[in-house]
Every structure is written in C-alpha cells, then in structure tokens.
Length: 62
Image (cartoon, rainbow, N blue to C red; front, top):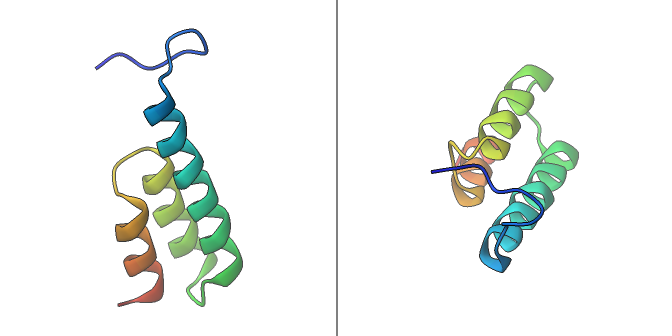
C-alpha cells in the first residue's frame, strides 16, 4: 500500500490519523508507565503497528 499524500488522502485515512494522534496525546498525559515504555507504545501506534484500542490496553496494563 502506498503512503497517502495531501492530494490522495481519504476522509477515512484522515479520521484514522486524527484518532491515532489524539490517542497518542491522551496516553502521553495519562500513563503511569516509564517514559521509554510510553514512547515505544506511542511510536508503534503512530506507525500503524497497533490500533488505538491496543495502545490504550498496553499503556494501562489492562
């Protein structure tokens, strides 16, 4: 799959990006884990390796 650009990105992709960034910001503010663990999870979230729901579970240790 080719990376989206400003001229090719869809509304669905924008919604997904917004959700990932909003989740990353939420997790950075609320996590009780070490900074390194937080950043690793947030990096994987923003890279698309995990979903926002998976990131929340990982950060909160649920």
